[in-house]
Length: 355
Ligand SMILES: *Cc1c(COP(=O)(O)O)cnc(C)c1O
Image 1 (cartoon, protein in one colour):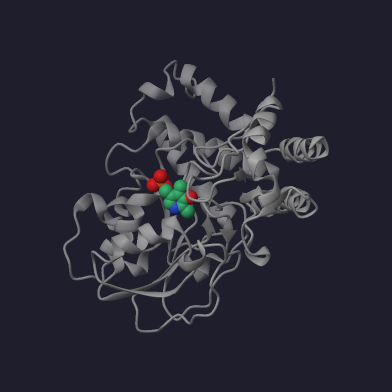
Image 2 (cartoon, rainbow, N blue to C red; image 1 turned 30 degrees about the vertical axis):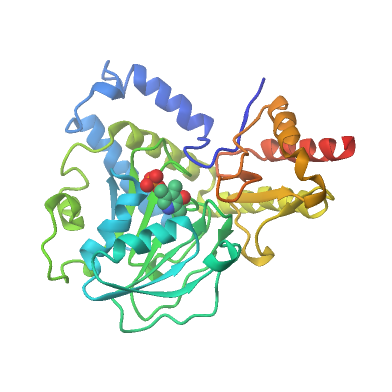
């Protein structure tokens, strides 16, 4: 049976990415070797890194003084690497979910953190908007898409200080103005590649201003200087990331992805809003385009397990909500075809008609 993959991460990749990766596992760039067994210093792999960096710059329209790095350690390592490199005295964060909470915790190791706003008291079911970014902090940090709670900030901030953004689960789904950002990071396993690589975009002028010593491996300048090849990078995930980037370009770039992402999300939210059985969990104006969270209305709560089984029988995979929210979460990343959303919506309607 055809599967419809709604996993939150690692998550669906384009058939193009999967096929090209499978091909390269057998024979990488006509070397007669598998991509799993080639030196990262080979000219064939150097070409992969070069093209992946160039395509990221092109797709996101990054200015020349922004560097693209492919690092290990996940987005979670960036929670510490960011403050290690640029927090001298004080930073400002907004707390919009689990990942933001984790980022704040790490930053506190390095300096003072001012939490400008938080929606923790209502289980992160909206994006706080009533705050001002102070001018006496080293940077302002936010999470653009809250993967677990299903809220999203789909705009750029005008900030008096450099902006740092965790775009792990919505990078390449929204056209943004890169000049409004100082550092952007994103774990690849949501919208780009298999897990194991994190894309980090850094504006060089932000670096070199903190007084603490920085371990070589955690210093962005090390990786910039060595073209993201200071040590052995995650070779296979970078190879797959390149395939996805090529696919995005061929599809018409970020703008084209955004358009179809909006259509997919509208289709599912419409189904939720017109349902007597299901209800969304977050404020309408803050709804994520990538991760749609919904639950059974109280009158139908006991049918949750039944719906899960019914969905499974239709080939739907990965819609169980995160344990901190419960219910359902359908992740609609770029690679998810609109047909899969249609299958989910039809399953919801069919199930509702039956009960
Ligand atoms: C998944 C996720 C993370 C954690 O990524 P790891 O690569 O597992 O460290 C951080 N932030 C956001 C927004 C995420 O969705």
